Every structure is written in structure tokens, then in C-alpha cells.
Amino acid sequence: MEAVRLVGITKGWAGVKAVDNLSLSMEKGEFITLLGPSGCGKTTTLRMIAGLEDPDDGDICIDDRLVFSASKGINVPPAQRGLGMIFQSYALWPHMTVFDNVAFGLVQQKVPRNQIGDRVMGVLEQVELAPLAQRFPSELSGGQQQRVAVARMVVVSPGLLLMDEPLSNLDTRLRMQMRASLKRMHQESGTTVIYVTHDQEEALTLSTRIAVMNKGELEQYESPEDVYDRPSTQFVAEFTGNPQTNLINARATQGAASSEAGTDLEVAGRVIGHAMGSGFPDTVVLAARPEALILCDRDGPGRIPGAVYATLPVGSSVLVYARIGGSSAGAGASETVIRAGRGAHVEANQRVWLQLDWSQVNMYDAATGRRLDNAVRP
Image: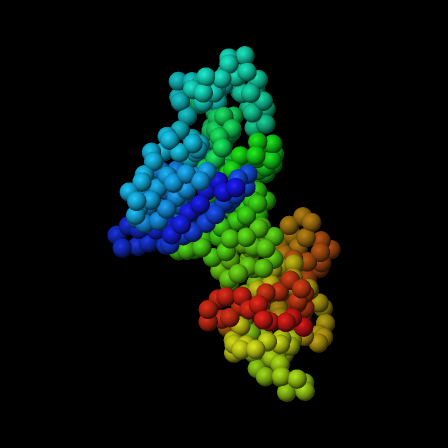
């Protein structure tokens, strides 16, 4: 059953479309993340669902109920849409204790007093604030205040919960803990969650599906696994990489060595592979995440020569930055990053060769940025 359906939602200001003809369907119990860079329209979309912004065009349905329609003149007020929202700002009552702030929604729902205490303290335990239940917001750090805001909304178990970057002010350790807490809360409550973030790691770890947005338009709407393994566009491949996804320019030419019609791929003057496909473009972009590049100390078939620029040990692995192509001085070279094993020993300016793990490489049309599904990897 659909929890939320957006049909042709459009919103613009001063001639610029913040959201452009967006259509999405979200099932009950899903954790949907709107992911994208600043200015892509994700927060505007969330606010239109909440009723805090009015679309210029389109329809919004919540639980099969039409709550907004530009063509029919329907616009249900936010308080009547049956949802909860956690803003990027805390919006806590300064004169209330942590306990009373979290309990506020339950009191409004007229939950029996003997149940409120257990529910509030249970949620405060999950966000590691139980010892601070009697403090006031002014006595808390910014991160603690944000956790109170999360707890206040989660405790009332709304059918639809909207979150606008609720973990942005937390330090790394608490952010990881809160992700685990949010995931557990979602699994236990079955609440439908729509979550806004620019943090691709957050989206990949929390979501059942991710809507990647760019300049007000939808680039891809699939599971985290599909978004990471098979990005639909070059933009998605690049945006969802941490460290950066390697985008390697390649030239496609008809292969002469084979009796079958085919396409050789050439990178930095080196033929590295053979891809079959009809209508193959002349120039393509290979998207390879750092773990899809294998660092080699000698040349071999299909390997790309390069020179190490820098190495960054990151505990369980080493990130090796290397330049491929260009002149010996580095002019015109492109930078790649390789995730090597913890024991890798390479030095700046060392000559290396890169081997592609083709099972993890996606190809894109350099002109359109769309993934080439007719490309067969070597």
C-alpha cells in the first residue's frame, strides 16, 4: 500500500525550478532517503509533502488521500496530514526539561500518564540521554539538543515521519550510534520515513530506497545496492562515492584484431579492454570505485600506467592517489584513487600500473552521462 505518492510536483522561485516535475511512489513502512547536493530540491520536496510549501503544480497523496492538488484546488493544512517532522533546527521548548520536551507529544495525544514515563525513558535510553532527563535545553550541547528533537518525534510513533538532516550536528561516533538507533526504531515501529540528507553514507546505511536528486530532477530511485553498484548516471556514480569515484575517460575504436565486430577501449594511449555493443559511442567514461582498481607493481595486459601522487593510511586500508595520462610533469593527467590493502607500501612518484576489476566498472556515454547497458565487460 502506498504511503506517499507525488505526481508531477513542481516548485520554482524567480524563474528557477527548485523541483521539476517530480513523481515518486513510497510504500508503507519504507525508509526513503532524498539524497543530493545543496540546492537539488530535496528539502523543498520534504516541505511540500509536509504542507509547509505549496507546489506550483502536481498532486500529493498521503495514505491514498489527496492532500494537495493544484488542478483541483485541494490543500490540506499541515496539522491535518497525519505526519511528524524533525527539522534541522532543534525547536525545543526552552522552559521544559528534556523529559517534558520528549513527553509533549504523548501528553497532546492524551496517552495515560502511567505509560508516558516508560515510553519517554525508553527512547531517551536509545539516544543516550536518560541521565539528562531533568536538564533544560540550555544545559545541553548542540548534539544533545538534536538527539532530544529526534526522541521527541520518534516517541509518538507517527505513521509518516519526515526528517530534514537530523544528525548533521552530531560528532562521528554519535552519528553512527544514532544511525543504528534510527534503523532499529524504524524496523520495530514500521513507520514510513522520508529522510533528507546530502551524506551518501547515511543514505546507503539507512534506506530501503534512495531518490538521488540533482537540480530539481530525479536521477535515480532504487535500492541502496543498485544505487551504489549500478548508478544510472555519471552524476550518481560520482556523488555516491566516498572516497571519490574514479571517472576515467576512454576512447572507443573498432577493434581490428578480432574477426567479430567489436570496440576496443583506450585509456591514456593504452588499449585496456574490449566491449561489444551496437551503437557504441566514440567516447565513454568508466566509473570505478577505489576498490575496483587493483594496484600492480609491474606492467601487464590491460593495465594502465600511472605515478603515485600521495598515500593516505586510513586504518584498515591505504588510499593511494595516482595520476594517469598526461605529460611526465603531470600536465593533463587525471587523478585516481585506489583502496589498497593495509600492508601496501608505495611512495610518492613511484611508477605503478592499475588493473580494473571489470565486475565493478560501469560505462557511461560521455555526451549524455547515461549508463551504457549494452556494454559487455571484458
